[in-house]
Length: 112
Length: 113
Image (cartoon, rainbow over all chains, first blue to last red; front, side, top):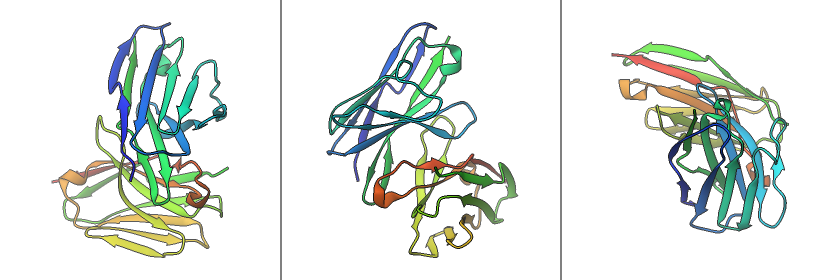
C-alpha cells in the first residue's frame, strides 16, 4: 500500500497567520482526501482533491479558508488561512487504493 | 450521503474481559468497513477491515461482524489488555467507487488492570 509523508508533524502558530501542510505519496493516486480532527472529536472530511481539477469541499468548509493544491498525482497541500484558535486540530491527508485507505501521520496544529 | 453512528462513546472493561463496539451506517452502497485505533497524540491506525461480501473476519483477539441487511457492524476485542486502551473509530465507504471514508464518532475504551 501507499506510503504518505506528511509535513509538518506539528506547529504552533499565531492567530491571523497561515500554515501550509504537505503530503507526499510514494505512488500515483487519483484521489486525495483532507480531514480535520478537532480535539476529542472524530475525523471530518474537509475536501477531496483530484489532480487537474478544483478540490471539492464539504459543507462547512470553503476554499478561501482551506485552499488546496494538487499539482500532480503524488503531492497535495492544504493551507489553513487566517488562523484562529478554533482551527487548532489535527489535520490528516489520506489516499484510497483498491485495498483500502492510507493516512498520513497527521499535523497537530495549535493556534495561539 | 453516508452517516455512521457509533456506540458507546465510552467503554470501561476489566482486563481480560471482552469489549464490543457497534456502528450503524445509512448508505446501502457502502461496501468497505474499517476500524481504526487512535492512541493519544497519534494518527488513526487500521486494525481490521471487512468488505460487504463477508459476514465476519477475525485477526487474533480482534473480530468484526457485518450485517448488511440491518446496516450495522461491530468490533469485538477478546481478552482485553491495558494496551488496548485507546479511541476506536469505525468508518464506512463505497471503496469500489474510491469514495471518501465517513467516520463514526469514536469510542474511548479503557481497560482497567
